[in-house]
Length: 276
Image 1 (spheres, rainbow, N blue to C red):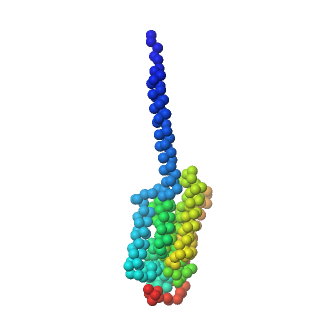
Image 2 (image 1 turned 30 degrees about the horizontal axis):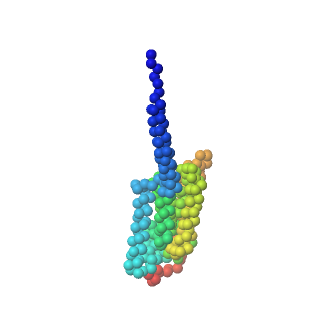
Image 3 (image 1 turned 90 degrees about the horizontal axis):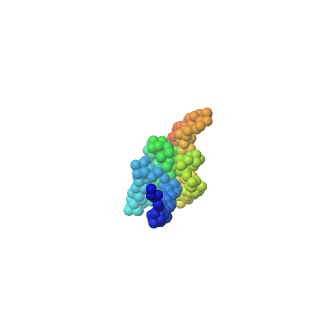
């Protein structure tokens, strides 16, 4: 009876194959890990078929169309915005132009405004939409834009402003809820939170350089999104549902009373058309 023997040459060939393939496998693992880390920090859940992508493109194209029109006709950009429906309370009250409260929501006030706002929406819009769903996400952004115009109209009735920062800070505030829940942040949580607060602060820069936005615009957007975020939040304790409906009630009270005050508190009839 013959006892089978192990060929040493076969063993050396197999070991050589393992040694050669191991570095390549480690390299592939490192590359995959690197890609995941980048995606978890910037533009997570990017999706062309989302609401965020076409919304971003529309906002970008709308601004550049207005900007090119202003350059060709050599007009003040504020006049171009006004003629295209920017929010101006005397016109809303005295000339029944309530449509300005809605039409000005997608308008941006300048180049720095559109660049910072566009990048912010790209960074935090997709993940926020993924978390809350298209319908809730769209509703929150619309109400944030309207609330931005509403608060600005009440605090600064004679300012010509746009409502796009309602959308931007609506996105930022929604992502803030994701950070508070500490979900979907991964192992780079501290870095993600640091970048978030940096972007949040950078979005205050256009207030200094652009006349078409003010602090009331930002506060109105944050307030509305906070209330809607609490309403959509799923609480684990007994009174959680009560808190959700209380937030919704406060939101409705704010919008109804604020819109009523928009027409009942008299403001001077200043005709912007004289200046444009």
